[in-house]
Length: 321
Image 1: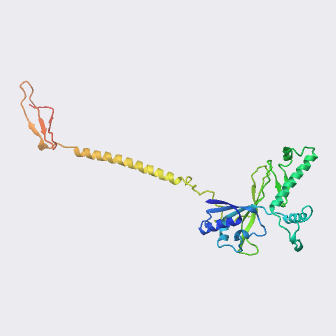
Image 2 (image 1 turned 120 degrees about the vertical axis):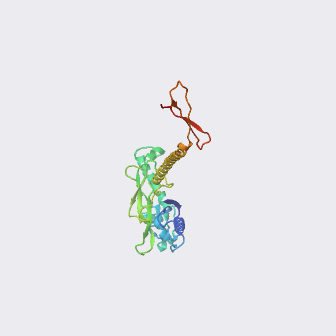
Image 3 (image 1 turned 60 degrees about the vertical axis):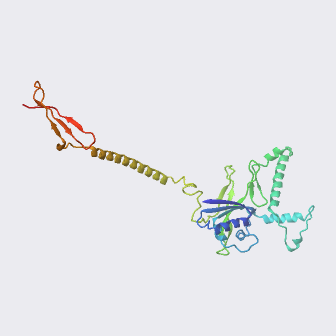
């Protein structure tokens, strides 16, 4: 299994998914893509994440490709319209005096999310400043002011609660999105929230994913983080052991067979060298011993073998009267 991580705008994610679908990499669920969108999730237009930039129709194969996709985006604002209305009203008052030309038609300026983040920063500082003055401390003492800010939560202009850690970093509010079928238009799809990230209550800095709905995995289950035998086959050692053991046994049998054959061949060679004395090859030479010796006959057996060197055998003497 191969996991791809893409960071950028949503239409850049579409290009990657379309290319992988065209290559057939997403058919069996062996490849998966996690996309991090730099923009906030638009809850009003879930289908635009499949149509691309300045397009109204979904590209061929893109809906199918996004089965193997999970997106991480900034959580949508809750009640952000009220904040936008208030900002537009204050911009027309002194000292700003900004005229809204669309006010006569009921229109107003769109407030970007950065405006809400700036508002949050000012409110957090103002709250710490009020507490510092109430305690009779020096508000010009930066470390003391920081002690009044860290490790606390506040209500963001985006509409949700934000938790700050001991380092003064605000908790990121992110939502997990995936492909879902449109309720109003069966057969068409968009990207909808299926989970959110939250900080645990045990003080850990690692957010916990809380799923709101199940994900339709390609192949019926989540993809493996690595192949069953490992990326280099290091986990499938059974066949290697069997092959090694079989090879060792075969080698041992060959060695034993070779030794047995050598022994058999040696015996055959010895058998070929064995000989028997043929009676026709024996010559008897008799001689008369001295008068002082008992009558005896010493027989000398001389034989002629097929070998080059003749040999002579002597038998023990036989006495006769």
